[in-house]
Figure: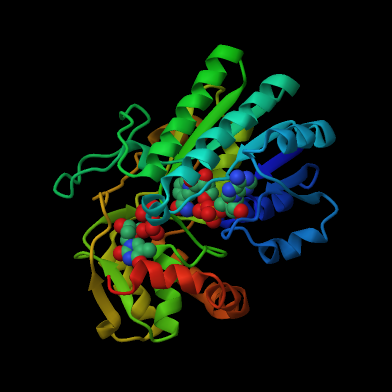
Length: 339
Ligand code: NAD
Ligand code: TYD
């Protein structure tokens, strides 16, 4: 099988590339990535020497480039990770999110329609369901929960989901969609909560917690997300949506305190800063469908996963030091100074 992984130079996509190369040595894995600020070829360094791996630089919202990809690589499967993925950036600059996440997905789907495909898998997020109240721990997102978005990012992802379903029904494209909770693990870009806090703590810099830090996220170790997508590709029902999550809910302040505790750093590094606009309160996935229909279970608990992740950042300083010494500094300044 020729499997195209769009956005494979980013956090989850690169972990998926490695997962597939290891678990499906008979498949060819083609990473198609624009290499935005979030894409990093160094992340794929270890894959480059694998004869089953190929990297192609390209933009999902460029029709010509996407058609060339289909003509030259003849993909059997597309797994679409490519996206603008950071909520805070979407609040600053929504239009880019619409272009990549919505138009880009529609161009990929058009190519599937024109050239044919065995499966188009859209990697979506639990954020399309909006948020849950903090005082109702009995409530969870199921696949039947209404889409109800809060940020330009989540609105663009929900639009892409709707387009994917529409193309499935109208043009009979064999689609599946997965909606996963927050991921963490190796190669996570340091604009996101967990890597940002690990790196700031290692550098004895302040840890900027939005508001009181009581917002809750449902954390999943990235490899468990990869195994879920792999199962959906193999056994998932065409046309279906699968929620992915492992019941690892934590408030942001708990996550930050855990990181400080593991690193032996003082809690005085925590700084409460102005809250995010429209900040979703709580995400919590009900993964019953994928567990019961596909037999998926996550392997890594939050306590193991966060230690593994911290160890990875300790052992791979050169990977993140290069990132934070570049354009990232301007982003950090814009986002956090005088906040
Ligand atoms: P990321 O920002 O780390 O990586 C995104 C990748 O997409 C980068 O390599 C970037 O270069 C590439 N890209 C961006 N625009 C592109 C374009 N126009 N054409 C081709 N490539 C382009 O993101 P991530 O955290 O790895 O998320 C991957 C996917 O998973 C996204 O679709 C995201 O919505 C979804 N998701 C993320 C999480 C999470 O916790 N990070 C949870 C659930 C779902
Ligand atoms: P993030 O990693 O941006 O993921 P998402 O918003 O997609 O869930 O943020 C996770 C949580 O951490 C979210 O509630 C916002 C909060 N947060 C902070 O408190 N400080 C920060 O510097 C960042 C980046 C996030």
